Length: 229
Image (cartoon, rainbow, N blue to C red; front, side, top):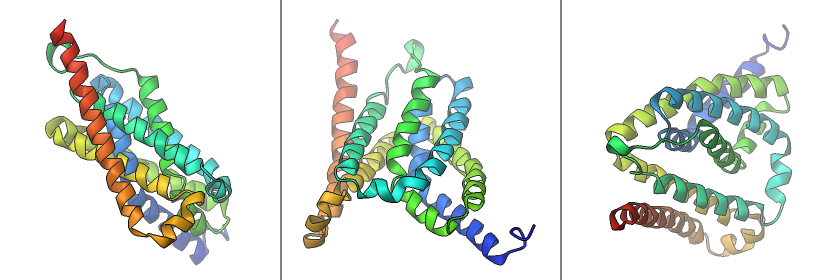
């Protein structure tokens, strides 16, 4: 009870919720991109399972995030993995539209959400951990309360993607942007980035262009193959 009556507790809780609102936008995009390939009845399940599991993952990740970020080449590997996820998600952009539409599996969608969230949350959880100030209760409460926010954001994005397909490309570009940012933020590149700060934005732009370019090419190839046969 004394904890709940503490002003610092409530300030910390508000900070964590606010941080998650700000930092969860890209996560909501990934969740929406992964869920849109599912049958309508399974989309909400993927969003709920993916968001809930991602928050649990973040809680566990927060404990070791600072040490993980110090490991050389970890963010480079994570960023490359994120590039692959973005390409795969965009490659399915128009796959199976119309009468012959095929759907992905719920398990595959949740797996994609978890992998992407793991990579994208490496640096985000540092801010959350700082706001929690070592309080595990505060951390769990703040992240749990943020689940509805992520779920709402992802649900809204799925509807917008269905109505405005160009948002799919924008979302994939965002994943590529974050991937480039993750790669250039690796511990082994700290000195290089300090000497040439512009490389940060260059890497982000290259990542976005890579995902969109390769993803579109794969999508075009997958549509051309059935036509040729």
